[in-house]
Image (cartoon, rainbow, N blue to C red; front, top):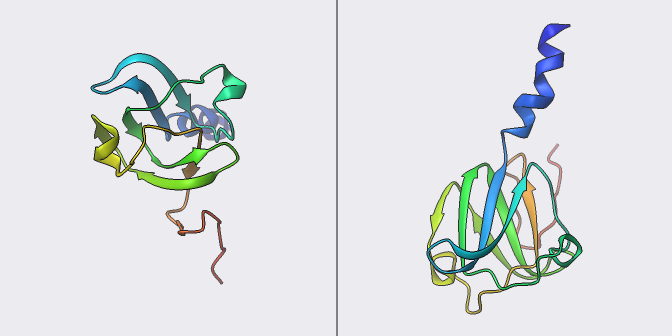
Length: 113
């Protein structure tokens, strides 16, 4: 039984992303650990997103709440400015994790047979 007790702790380490209001990881920030967030506003974060630090996992950021608008793929690493992740405007309002590397342009998950 011991391994199953440890697995939730290990899972929580798999996905971590921090989004910052200003370039070069400054200003207000929102930190997300192992969760999909359909709306930053619901978490009290209404600022723009100009830089992103992915500590683990792979994420898709969306321009608007509800996983809508332009999509940005975030793999592990540092994105010092919105141009680093290909955004015309420093706006991200929802994020979701990619748990199985099945990423599609339409933002939907399609199981494979």
